[in-house]
Length: 173
Image 1 (tube, helix red, strand yellow):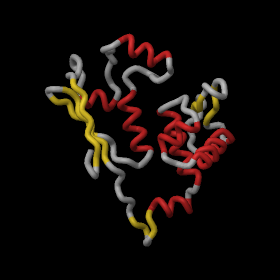
Image 2: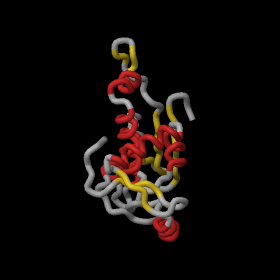
Image 3: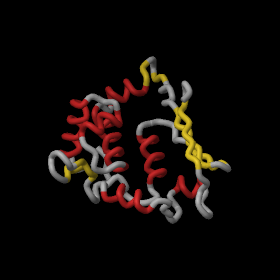
Image 4: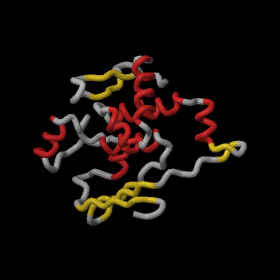
């Protein structure tokens, strides 16, 4: 861990002809190393689609305005570097975030929440709080807005269900 980044390392070489570029674009056939673990994660709905995780991580980072993580294949494994948020550019003495709050308000944050729901379907309100660091009341307000617009729906029982993007709704709030 560093002041401006966190570096992760996972031992184990990439399989066959797999490259970092193929992983980043999602243009490859996924090969499971541990089929039992993958099967359990799939049954728990923790895997949406095999081989799509890196692309969804990149999309989630960019949806939150964070720099995309850097991926590097090394002889001994895979390294990933996640960077701290960039400082917003100043606009007339007011940061873009504050200015966006005046101009875009809830819409910008609701849009980011929608991207999170698309990238990790099935999360609950408390999990959104953990992922975003935003207050529960704000999350509940944005969820209500997205539901009213038909962008998301809650599926499953109250205690075990979660939020999902509605099929065919590509417009953003």
